[in-house]
Image 1 (tube, rainbow, N blue to C red):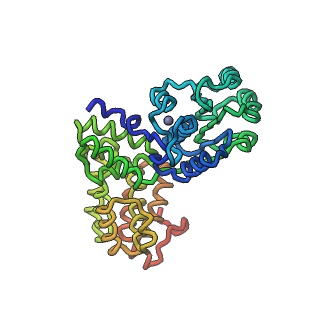
Image 2: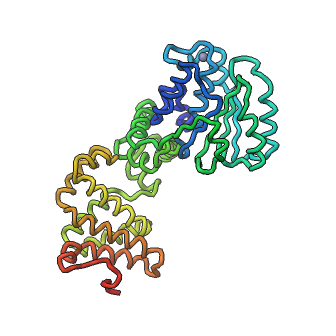
Image 3: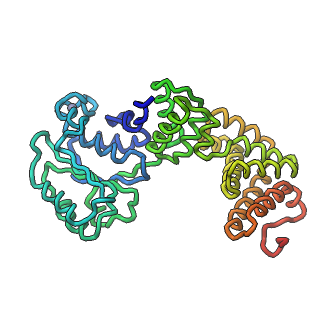
Length: 379
Ligand SMILES: [Zn+2]
């Protein structure tokens, strides 16, 4: 299992067609290579762990490949490609501006730019977290970015596009990388599990993908950690515990208790959740997410937006049949109000319990003109 602990590296995409969730970027880059109209500077923007550096490396490898394929992908076998794979290529320079952001760091880079590549066609400079460069470093870099030698390509990457100066932005071709969908992450994790003979189930992969919040790198490092923790397998309950995720089942049960106006079940469930070590506000946020999912199940168009495994989606569709829209909207309003009050409350547990009890009778309360309006609230 030891050799599995590098899945982020082992399964890193090597060519454009393997890049996941960023087809708009890889297609545009490939077309530019094809037409020979490649910009000299690129700015890759987007959340962390969605493939910006990977795309930069693929671009660098492809434009230096000696025998590219008919689809304009790197061949992976020529001298240039193999030296890239072994990290021994002299044509690619990576600078992490988060830790090397001084004017000296940039001057050193600018000095290197003057020398043409010893082999291959292009020298590629990747500057990660470029927004971290100091003002002086930015200024030292601007001239080079403006008039670089023809053999130079700059790929700047950032998670914070708004911090990039307009003078830099205007000199770069900008690509916006997206968060990767849960479906795409699940698919990739599934492929890895199959390849590595790791027993898994779909719901577990969904939990990991959801927790990764659009970042493939986070999803893969979680997978590594969970598999090594689980002794070579992924067990649903262990994964929930490890990622500190509350089982969906609790939200279904809480909603059932609300619909049945069963206060006793409701408060017992909340007690169990607290006993498991979850915070009241996290539970309330999760419950509101649950109500939102139910609301989205009310129409086919919105149900399709939900990123859920098929078994889980079926459960949501079933519960949505018994939870009416009015109930859900009122509960969401109460949940939202609880979220606001929670921070100020001295008795946080009671704040959540009160919101839950109100939710329990929300259908009746609306009959007698219940409102969350401040003046009418019972203090
Ligand atoms: Zn090649």
